[in-house]
View 1 (cartoon, helix red, strand yellow):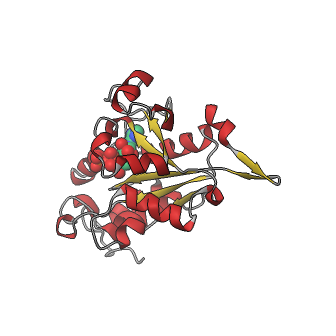
View 2: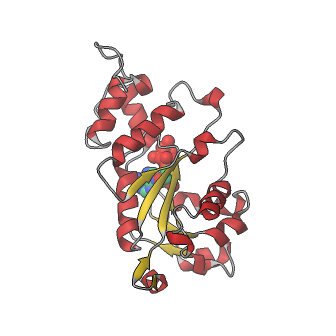
Length: 229
Ligand code: ATP
C-alpha cells in the first residue's frame, strides 16, 4: 500500500496515523466495524477512533436513538479490540458539530495524530464523496487529514478521474480502498427491529441485546425492564 512509505521512524519508534470514522451509528453495525478493520489493516493505521455525531436534541427521539444510547452501543461493539476507540467529542459540544472542529481538536492536543507527526485518515464511504466539496471548511479538513474512501453497495465506485475532477490538485490526499463490500445499513436495521425481525449477525451480539433491553427503534419493551447500565 502506497502510504506505508509515509510511516516515519523516530529513533526506532514507528509513528502511524490513526483512522477517524464518523457517523450517526444509529446503531453501529458489522458493516462499520468491517470497514474500520479493513482500513486499519490496509493502511497500517495505529487504530481507528469512532466519533458518533451529535444530532439536534429535539430530533433525537422517535425511530432514532438518543446520543447516549448510540455511544453506549459503539462502546459495546468495540470492547475487546484494543485498536478501536470511541470519542464523545462531538456529543460534548454545545454548538453544531463539524468534522473540521473534531480534526482541529485532535490536531491541537495530539490525540489520534500519531504523536503529532502523522495526519489522521478520515474514513468515508463513497456515498459521502459527491457531497464532500460542500462540507464545512473542506480545505482545512484536507490539510488536517487524508481521506480513505471505502466502497458501499449501491453506490458507484470512485476513481482517480472523479477525485481529480472534484478536488483538483488535492487528489493525492485521497486513497481508495477496495472493500469490504457488505450491504449493512443502519436504516435497514432500525426497520427490521421495528418490524419485530432479527438483526442477529447484522450487529454485534451485545448491541443486539442492548437494543432489545432498552427497547430502541420500536423493539418491544423487555419483560424485566431496561438493562442496568
Ligand atoms: P443510515 O442507514 O441511518 O444512513 P449508515 O448505515 O449509513 O446509517 P452511518 O452511521 O451513517 O451508518 O455511517 C457512518 C459511515 O459508515 C458513513 O461514512 C457510511 O457511509 C459508512 N457506512 C455505513 N454502512 C456501510 C457499509 N455497509 N459499507 C460501507 N460503508 C458504510
